[in-house]
Length: 398
Image 1 (cartoon, rainbow, N blue to C red):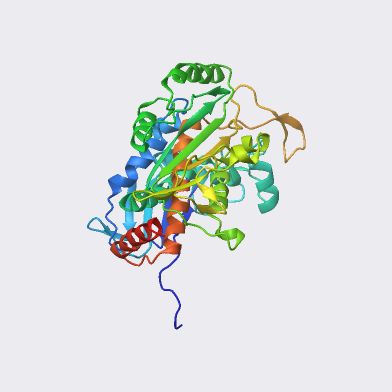
Image 2 (image 1 turned 120 degrees about the vertical axis):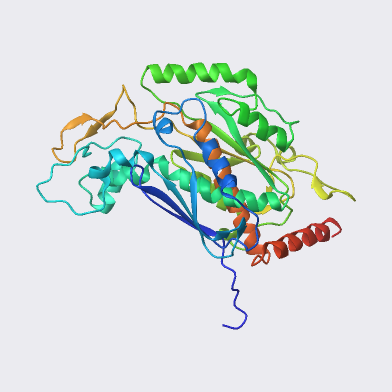
């Protein structure tokens, strides 16, 4: 059709179960000629496996990506990118998770009929009609986030080549709050978080957080916390005010809330804004030749009217404790017998907040990259970069 855009919107799909053969990610809409290697993706995947409080599953799996399409000789082709992460543990689950039909009288191992409070177990069984709740928990497992991190790693590479950097880290675990470190550069945030066992910027909080995680583990309990993502380099005006579904902060909030166990999102000072006057909340506007328009503060976290202001994007997400409780399973109901009984216990982490900060970093990166490719021509990466550079210069002198 005449005038119709040929370049696809950046998006991704994932497939695979926690103990299935593999996780698959297909990323569509990535410009051609973007330099990228599987090491760029593996770096992100390995970071997701780290963090104090991870369980035994991360000792079994070695999350390394296999690129099966869309990249040739270190550059994207412009066609869909296909990424595969193999599940090494599948060899122990072939009879449980295999795709071939089984005889009706076959007695399966590890059938689940006791849903866990706080998990997708019961709601998913009711929606899809599965009598074996394993059909729910295998897909609703946070194992799926490895596939999302792979997609986000592609987006992060795109952003980095455009001069945009993203950092994710932990702000709070189990009520222990890391002190603010406002003066740190984006590089310092990335490096400090990477070298911290709990991925915090405040080293004085590490030991207390780790001790709280140890306590939860010893008691068979779990801990939640708060993650923060900090983004520098996004020009002003990315996103739009004209429709609700084009507001970039709303999209980011939705992507963060979609991460397993995340229950809340805030930008800048967030919910503190409800406690102060407007004169104390909004960010005053200034201009100089080097920076163009900027804000003298960043209480709104880099957004006004659903669009970026050019200031750093600051977004936080709260993660509830994981619902699998090893020694303290909550009361539930067996869906076969209707008996009141303790919930099923599946292998899990006492605390996955550090790993979740990596997941959050990558889903935020993907939404920003998606918004940029919607706003600027992106069939070819060099032309996208040229368009972004031209736009930055244009708005500086607006």
